[in-house]
Image (cartoon, rainbow, N blue to C red; front, top):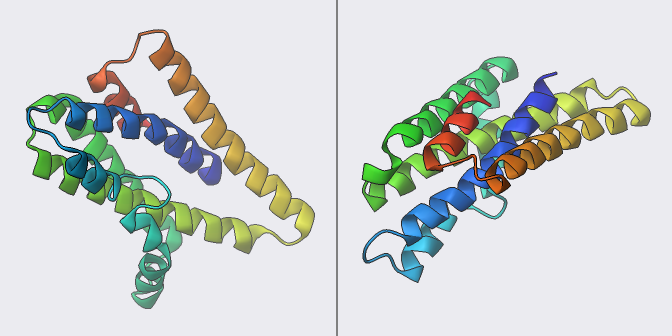
Length: 168
């Protein structure tokens, strides 16, 4: 199901956020301001792209772009950014990391909002709505727990966590 897969990817991305923060914090000359600026653009609640979700959905509706197409485009953008990070994150300057994070976050926020809309649209009654919502949240939980276990076991380096997010 699209909603479970989209939320699984969100669960994986939650760990990428931590890895990106650690990467920026380890950069020579990194300041608290750098970390706060990065945090404003990461794929997580409270960031600027996630606050813009209603506007992003309005733009998609205004241009009559089908939700399925927009979700696929968003997933592709996220995969490209995380895949790029898996190969080049250590060599990238801070500014590029922030811009790429903002791009992935915007794509992730768009996908999240559209999947939520599809869930609401498909929910003919309260029981279906609860079932759809649970499938979504279980997907996020599964993505987060599996990635967390891999990270905890020491099996995930920066490159591997970003590659896992690209695949998810």
